[in-house]
Image (cartoon, rainbow, N blue to C red; front, top):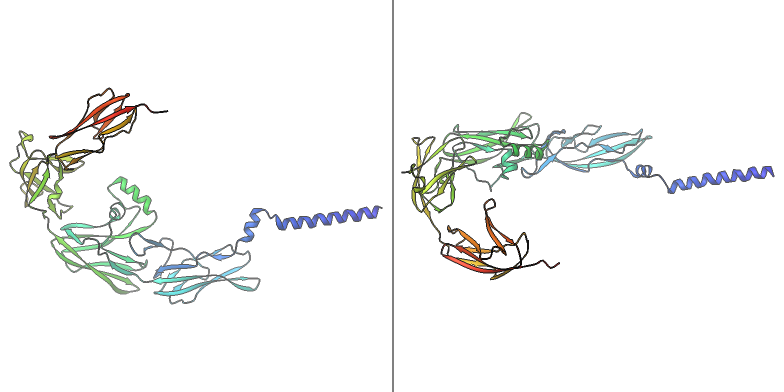
Length: 438
C-alpha cells in the first residue's frame, strides 16, 4: 500500500506540473506577452533627405517655408540579445550609412535602399529595408508676394513668417546643410544677405518673441535682409557652393521705389480717423516723416477741419468738421525735403433711414442678453444713434461707454415703447416684458 501511495503522489505531481505548463501557455503575464510579440525591425522604411551629411541638428524646407523636414537615425528596434546588425546601402554613390546605422549622408540626387542584416547563431536574416530618396536643393520664386519695396532697409525674418503670415520672395527646398548659399545683387546700390533665424533670435515685441520661441522650438529657417540706396529694379542671383563647386540655383527681381504721396485727394467721413501713413506710399521704415496741417489754428483746435491724434505710438488724422484741409509731408522735420501734399476732404453722411427687425419684441424679467437689432442707412452715417425707453421702470436702456453699445435691462412685467433716433430719422418699436415661465 505504501508503494501505491507513492505512485499516486508522483502522478499527482506530474499532473500538477503539466497543468502549470499548459496554464503558462494560455496565461502569460502581460509584460511577457508584449515582449514576445515585439518583432525586431528598423526605425524607418522610407526617407527623403537633401544632399549632405545629416545629423540631429539638420532641418530643411520641403515645398514652402511652412513645411519642415528633419533628419532621423536609422536604427534597430527590439534587438535580439547576442545578435549583430549591419547596415548597407544599395548605392553608395547616392547615400551612405555607417555599418552600425545612424544618420544618413546624401551624396547626390537619386534613390537607394538601406538594408539591415541580422546575424544570430551563424544565421543571417534581413531585419528591414528603408527606401531613401536624395534630393538636390531646388529654387522657386514666390509669384504671389509683392517684390516692390521702399528705399532703405527691409527683408524677411521670423516675425514676418510666424506673426504676419507672410512668405519670402523665394524658397530653397532641400537645402544642403554642408553647402554655402549666397545672394548677390547686380548693383552696389542694393546689398543683400541671407540670415539664419532660430528660437533665440531677438525680437523687439516681447509677446511675439515668446510665441515664436515656443513655435519654432529647436528648428531654424533662413530669411534675408537688404539695404537699397536708391530707386530702381535689381536682379538678385542665388548660388550654392558645395565641395568647391558653385552652382547658380536661380534669380529674382526686386523693385525699389522712392516715398511718394499715395493720392492727391483723400476723403474722410466726419468723426473718423486715418493713419497718416496712408497718405504716402513706400514709407522707409528707417525714416521719420513730418505731417503738417496748413494754416492750423493752434488757439482754437476745434476750428480745424482735421487734427493730429496720437494713440499707441501711431499718428492719426481726426476728421473734426466738414471742409477741406491741406496736409504737407516732409522728411524728418517741417523744414525737411518735401514729398508732396494731400487735400483731405471731410464730409458728413446724414442718416437716411432706420430699419428694425420687428415692430414688437418680447423680453423676460432680468434677461441678460436681450437686444434690439437695427440697421442704419447708410451704414457709415456720421449721425449718432440714440435709444430711449418711455417706461424705464419696465425696460431700462442706457449707453455702455466702455463697450461702445446700448444695453437693455428688463426690470419688471409690462410694456415699453423704444424710440431709436439718428439724425432726422426715427423709428418706434414695442417691447413686452414677461415673467420667466418656470
